Length: 309
Ligand code: CMP
Ligand code: CMP
Image (cartoon, rainbow, N blue to C red; front, top):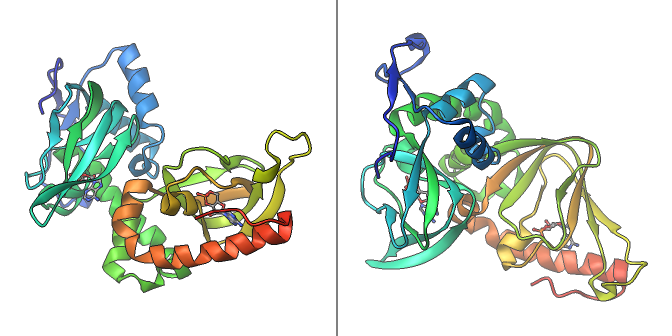
């Protein structure tokens, strides 16, 4: 796909080549109207890969992005191709199709948010999936060179920062080191202030959390008392450093079973549902086993079992 209406202006402004292993590339700027910039900022505010960038790098990324309109059935990416751009979704629904034994299988969908196309650019590999627009949609593209210069370089820093911590997370112990590092490459970091709600019971789920610091309180309204006035939230449990939450809805394909709140300032690693499916598939058994424990907790608290599965 080619940028639609805008011709890039290439500024000769140099970046510091000392700490960059890529061929020196000029800075890419696609001029935008204020209205476009607002839409772009909105589309990018929850993109996990941008969450650990410094402000300066993030502005460079925004400058380099260009708008693309797509038509129903358009293939934004074809599996096996070389990677040209990374994409952030502004709107539209996109199927993720992966060839399994030569047959295309839809393994997931992006619904009006998220991003894709990072893998081929990060690891210099062919595109790992085909992405098909199911309706008219809008995307923001980021060219390969800028992605590598800013995001891939930031990943080296992320690995240094989170490698040790990720090694210590019990859930991830069964993975190979290289698999854990792939998680680090795509994770985002979010901070929450005291009492801030991280997850709301009943919401649709699109990510999974690991606590890096602070405590997270899991609270639930009884499902058997829906619409009753005394249906206040009850604390079920707390998660601390190294523990995870928000996996249940991803494993069961159901809405969030409980709410989660920050106790004090909390930092969490965040993994989106697509990366969760791709990289944590082998940990799902451990997570499924834990559901019985959740159900026992609920029986103890509410006197009745709830069907979490
Ligand atoms: P890339 O390989 O560059 O191009 C296809 C993109 O699809 C890939 O990056 C990911 O961003 C995205 N994707 C989402 N789910 C999957 C999956 N299960 N396997 C491979 N790629 C996926
Ligand atoms: P999820 O349903 O995605 O969002 C709320 C999270 O609360 C849930 O995943 C679990 O990770 C966590 N949780 C902890 N204890 C329980 C419990 N007893 N029942 C349901 N969810 C629980």
